[in-house]
Structure formats: C-alpha cells, structure tokens
Amino acid sequence: MAYFPPIPVIRRNLIITRLRQCNAVSRETAVTLSEAGVLNPNGFPRITELLCNRGIINKVGNKYYLATR
Image 1 (cartoon, helix red, strand yellow):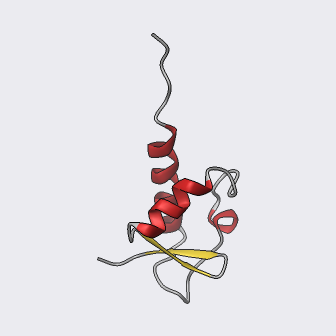
Image 2: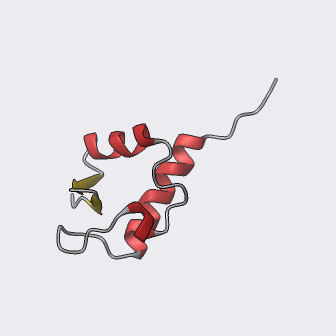
C-alpha cells in the first residue's frame, strides 16, 4: 500500500504558523502568503479557501490574518 503524506494538514499548519510568526492578527497587520514566507503561495488554493470559510483566517484583498476566537 502506498503512503501519501497528509498534504492538506501540513499546508494548513504552515499557513497558520507563518501568519502567527508575522504577527498577522488584524486587518492592519495582514500580509500576503508570500510575505508570510509560505512556499508556493498560490499552490493548493482550496486549502486557503477552507481556512477562510471555517473562520481560521480572514482575507482582506489579497492579504490574510489569523481570526480571533
């Protein structure tokens, strides 16, 4: 049986970690995924969309920041 790494989980954790490291926690401090240091920021757009839809991150224009809970 072939093993496939959990790419969506790894990608989700990378985006969250990078935004946290950049202190992107509000509209004023929002950054692009590229500015946050996410490799291939346009790769796996569905994962980024899911994070927004689930209220984990917020989008302002082409920038993102962590949602507060």
